Image (tube, rainbow over all chains, first blue to last red; front, top):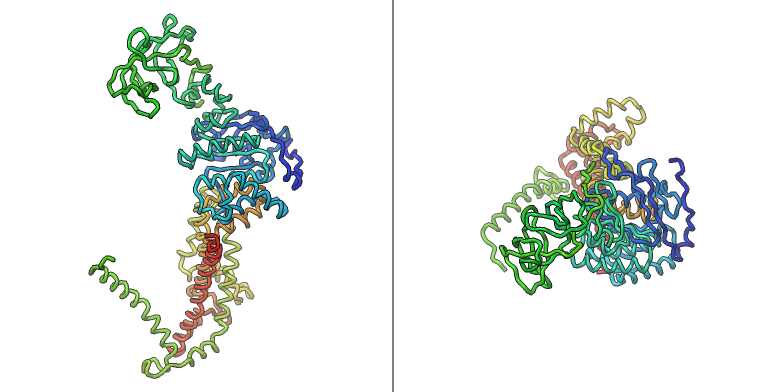
Length: 372
Length: 268
């Protein structure tokens, strides 16, 4: 494309002291082929509305990080692809001119500077005057609640503290968009939950356009206004967390988000007949070969009229508030069922299972794409 | 406290024996340099006569060696650090091959390298007789040490992500290189500098062929002194060499450590 170089006019130092309007981001036909010929990303069109948080979710190698790097300007899309910020073409603009805040899984803090030095760095290289810079750094340290760490060296910080410093550093320059690449992956589970809540509150408060890359669906559900599920370099489905969870478009999405139970069988007169029993399914597609349902839409029931399926407990885990049962119902992987913790179950127990009406999911695109 | 067993004392004894075996000749040599007559032994008395004679006769070689090693350091810094950076950033097999090839000048005998230099450039009159001819040889020999030591540190830190982080904050290439990359490779650069200066200072094999009577370096002068003068003079020369190189090594070590301590102390 020849239309590159239409850089948005940057106001320089004056703009830095006031809040910036969040930017909308658009990708047009962005594909990425690496030098060795591997195709990391199929041509992608994507619109990220100003102020929204969009989560790219998928297994490793699905192209989510590549997409983020294209938005950041760390990778150029294959010729023909365009990146637009507020409608202005920034494809040819290098990362240092794009003014995006980046947070990495490995933090990428500068070990040769203390916490203050790290947070101040972006302001320093932009030539912000010293007093204004110090004030802004104080503001950021207060926002991330890391003032006591101001003079610590980076190697004296824990992982959670490092990620706070990385966020403060990225936000100090008032970026037009915040891009986070698996920011919580390197942290332990408890800290991850705490920081996730904090990041969520931060993003809501700042109203900044955010791209968040993760392979953790719980993180994606909690943070995303919209989730873009990716597989093999393409978008498998894009929508709100609720849409993605309740109406997955493909089998890949259905299994990647949350836990999904699967039973093989066939449709017979408004019922789905399996080896373990039959489930009512009035609006079943006539060619359905398997039934998909979530653990929360199935419950343990008395054998007899109420139970649709019969199975045998393979393993039972006591989770405190409830029990998680793995129930073998004929063929394939055991079904995951949640039961009240009051009653205890043991391996080998025979249980009846009842499904809520409407529990069985219909995929818009049931045939799995085999990486074509 | 645990009582130490026989094995401990045996090991200590062995270690001390090996140390003595290595250090005693050095001490003897340095003592010889201040002994009136080495044949008669220490009873003949101590004197600085030989040291003064070395200083009078070989002062120029000492200055030249210091000059060449510092020039060598400057050149290896300017060539080696950027080279290491390019090798660290390049992911190609070609870069890996270059990295392996870097050991060649170390593996090839210095004499062969020197001969190659003479065959190639020996007829360039002025160049052949100038000290820069020796400098070229020394750079050839020491550059790999600088590159490898800096490269080791660059590979240990996540250089690419650090640089991407700096770039996303708006830092230009120059700012990234001098404010982020160089300070974080400091330990590698200092270790490389230490190697380069000491190797250049003590280099003999190659210099022996490259030098002219007017461009003798310290080790060449030393060989000269041992070959043609009294044993005491040669030993005094060794003493001078030690007195020069040891403070230099200590100074570089200290320079490598000092700022980190200074930074850590008030904030600990």
